[in-house]
Image (tube, protein in one colour):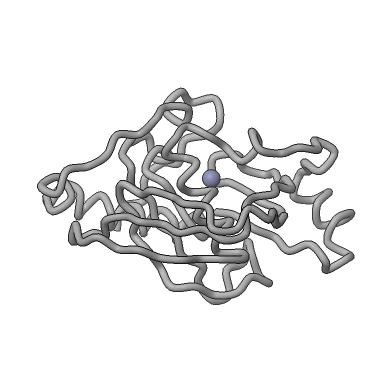
Length: 186
Ligand code: ZN
């Protein structure tokens, strides 16, 4: 088990555009071991997704998956876990939905972000096989958050109303009473 260090906002790699991987690179033992490390890191930090740039590697590779009973996102629906390489996103429903997002690279904060509610994601899996997936609701936000990382974007760039950016403690105290807003993220 190798837990990698998660880099934080301010580190320039988080602002880079990641490069795609070739089929040969995906199947290499280096990449396969890297994927294992990403899983270990995501579990250790209790994330519901992680992107390569967050451990300082600017590859178009991310993991998305909401486990049962994640302590950081207790009320979110469980999802399958996906290894997403060289993704292409198509918006299927422009109608926006908002969730409170957090990010392992922006620790201690939550912010309210609106994103398209339904998308199609085409990508390669860890065996370099093409996959196509249609996702909506919460998991669509998680995908968009993670795939933003591959383009050097952070969720804070997408916050429209900075009054809805809060530290975790204040978020718990002032913003979780009404259950009309769900929590999201990585
Ligand atoms: Zn993130």
